[in-house]
Length: 140
Image 1 (tube, rainbow, N blue to C red):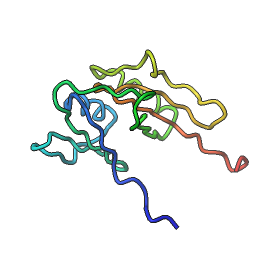
Image 2 (cartoon, one colour):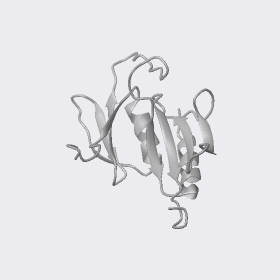
Image 3 (cartoon, rainbow, N blue to C red):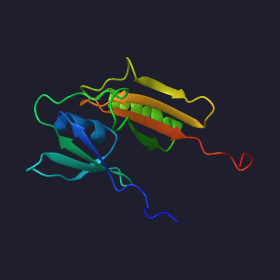
Image 4 (spheres, helix red, strand yellow):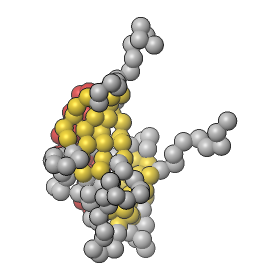
């Protein structure tokens, strides 16, 4: 039996707190807290809690192939339609990167029931938007 019961929250370091909040706001997340002494913003979609923490000036960028740490954050959406809408919504946020190395529009992940897109939020964190197609009763 596991001694844990899930992930409480994920904390992301961000170089631009307001711009990174705008990314999550576009997905429908609501601000539920934060701190002025260590500038931060806590956001939730009603299921998951994400804490955004402002870095000092001139932060070091993370290289997912060379650094140990968070490779990406995957956010689940409830439908294929929601995946398209989420991708379009964040693509309209200033500073979001939806193409180039490591980013792509919605596509299936070969051999899985997963359709996903990868974007970079304004501070450079790699975010995966993912839809898990549920198997039909005949497939179970």
